[in-house]
Length: 396
Image: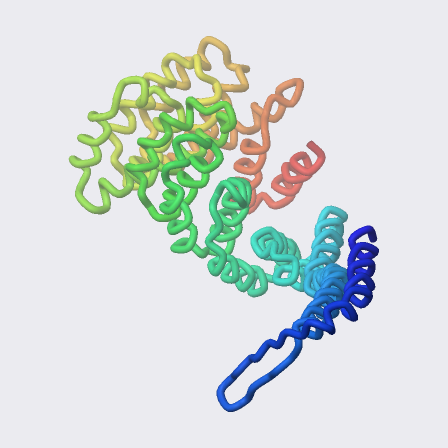
């Protein structure tokens, strides 16, 4: 405001002084090509003052106008993004509340406008999966491939969810590509290690899985049961590959090459026995099972033996009968005798052992015993007795 007052005063001062200067006229001549402009010095000075004042006013108005237009322009440009973010927030809320259909709809609509394509498409894929819409889920996962964002930006959790969905939808190549891209993180995050093992089992890389099991055992995030299931799966197929791709001798060499502690693991031992029993390799199988039965210390292992597809059980039955001579009402040995006799084809002995077992006090049998006993009775045409056993199984 002060500047404006000074400018106005100067303007009027110029007007006041100009008559004095009129007596001593000076001229200015400006030539531009064929055009010439002639003016007195006083007139030129007055025009300059007027132009200067006009310029000041123009700048004042223009400055305020620019400020106003930038604010309006910002609101106009980012209106779509703000709307997208609102839909994204609503979609996440719907997902948390379990309204997966609405969540999928909102998340897909918000992906592009909100500039949050990674989280929007990922949650949309998960929401579609929870509705059993595999096609939609795969489509959203495919959209994620266009946005190769850094793991520091999206977080390792996004990678884990993507991997889980890819494996669930049998997109194994895509899952392998993701794991290979982030292979340096596998050694630093146990969750990625678990996904690596799961996928490697699907890819039938059993030797590699067996190597990774040592790392998994050191993890505090992976529970023992999950590791044991991986171990049983990997070793069973590794043993099976030896005998199907080569011969019995290769299988024996592979077993002999394992460490003593590895052989003593229950899941590894049972996987080996399973393969031996399936291929009817009787001598090595009896060599392993007979000491276990003679010792009789590992009850869980004895129960697991009942499920093996055994056929030649003479030596094993004799070892069980010796235990029963000392304690004929022992449920553990009655169950073992019943199942081994059933596998051997001695149905009379099996039925007698099962009858003794189910009539012991305190229900010392389990579901495996009842199912085998009921099937045995049904196969022999004793349907009434079989139904009674099944009823016990249902009421148990």
